[in-house]
Length: 347
Image (cartoon, rainbow, N blue to C red; front, side, top):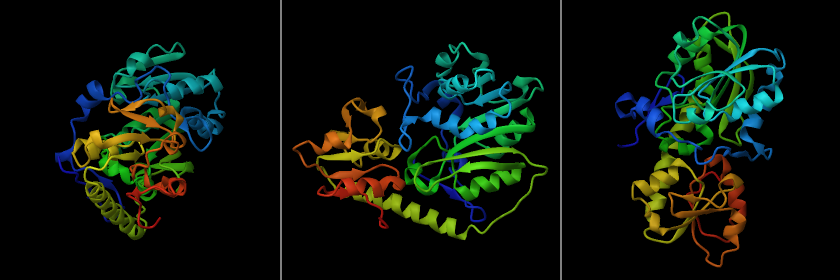
């Protein structure tokens, strides 16, 4: 299927058009297995050197303290890493979880859960009840209609509820062009517009230019509104991202059949080998700075190693950057002396 996106030139919202979308219900129920290799597997937040779920609890913690004996519903809870760390820090909060994928089998074993559903979100599951806290971590980019999803979630919130939302920042992550299950590609501008339209107001945010995730804490606002801001600059940046995506694929093609290393375990890397732009037999190794991946294999045959391990090798392989663009400036400094391909023009 060709990569195809639609751009709204009013708000800068980017999305995959419905005719080219995967069958998401079947995908999440039967095929989605993110981080299911091991029971406790979880990436590390590289900025702080702690587990990613711990970082999220720190971000949300100031709000959880407001009602330390409240209730929390995690929508799209995965294996329950976030909930487990909430339980450690706030043991008196009653925790509930919703997860439609195969992760539910591990999630359901968590003894501290007060309730868990192996379902997609539906208001009817909760019989008119509301929760003090809710979370949508890495969920909103996957759903077919983010506006309808947030409108539905509003029904299980009360006026003092806080909702934690995390989505990738498309402006710092060119790789999202190649992520088939991310149906929406949000920017800070477009996610803010979405919150306005559905009647949610931001009370805390973390949307740095130096990393991919954007986190928001929102609550119900008094009214829904449409407050379109000037998106011209954002739209120009999105067009540049599209050009870069094309140029990166062309750079990969230009390598021919050279033996090489890929830097970054990302959807782009997967796209390059599954589209035969690069033959996987030519990929000698995958470099990744997150120690979570060290010592594993990619696509069941390519060893994953740290940059330090790669740099000790006597073979000076050319390196194709497949990691998110916000990290280019950091790795380019380390790659002096190597042939490097796929660098953004502004680096």
